[in-house]
Amino acid sequence: MTKQLPSTSRSLPIALIRAREGVMSPIRDMLSETGITEQQWRVLRVLVEFGRMDAKTLADRSSLLFPSLTRIAATLRDKGLVTQTRDDKDRRRQFIEITANGQKIIDDHSPQAAQIVAGFKTALGDDDYERLLDLLARLDPGADP
Amino acid sequence: MTKQLPSTSRSLPIALIRAREGVMSPIRDMLSETGITEQQWRVLRVLVEFGRMDAKTLADRSSLLFPSLTRIAATLRDKGLVTQTRDDKDRRRQFIEITANGQKIIDDHSPQAAQIVAGFKTALGDDDYERLLDLLARLDPGADP
DNA sequence: TTCATTTCCTTAACATGTTAATTGTTGCCA
DNA sequence: TGGCAACAATTAACATGTTAAGGAAATGAA
Image: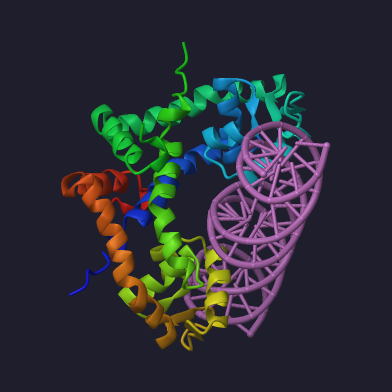
């Protein structure tokens, strides 16, 4: 007897999609007035947190595939929110850095973003919120160490 | 003093993305030999579980936006995996039904899909697995009742 | 040095996500 | 009945996800 698939209502992939949608919906609303997308916001946040870095590291930390980052970086550059600099030591490599305008977008909207996150933390309760983050981390193959 | 954003390493949206990537990666590998995508698989699974239904309901149950479903339904129809029928009572509406070929794809790969899911359940442990599904459901605004 | 390999990045092609505008139908109500 | 709001579905436009192929630069071994 082979195993049966769970009902779609108890499917882990679908539950992850729906949860993500629930979390991102208010964030997207907040971002709509900035003119940048969710992924562009993520890239800028990583740059604020870690500073200038090469494209590969940026893609990893932003959880973006490399081809996506290539396009997003070009878009952000065209918007004047980041700069791209070729590495003189290794001319394959490229450094990406946030500009003052990019920094301003993060600064202007961080409080609102933090409030949205705090709302979810309150809704779940601090314990369940941390428990959820821990469980999710255990599904992430890149988070083992 | 305004609240600060959490480090991206403890960001709920990013944790959801990474967890989803971890879960979907083996499923995508499995699907690569079927010639259908993850979303097409999801649509077919819903049709198997609930049978023929109108497009709006199908989009809801598949967690897809309507424009995405329009394209996916057209693709699946071209592949001969579903049929589309206009409702005679209400000619705005459309019914979608899986075909024998579509059913066969699900049947042929369900055991393998179930095994992948079972792997995650084992990795987390039954209790944590159920706890995770419950926590995720609490982030889904469409799951309140 | 030479050349195959590896690495970083880009481009291409197709599918989906997302929002907005559009089309065709139905229902309602003045 | 005539006209308008509401609804189902499509289309359009742009951004991203995903895989594969391509280009340029560095690396290492013969």
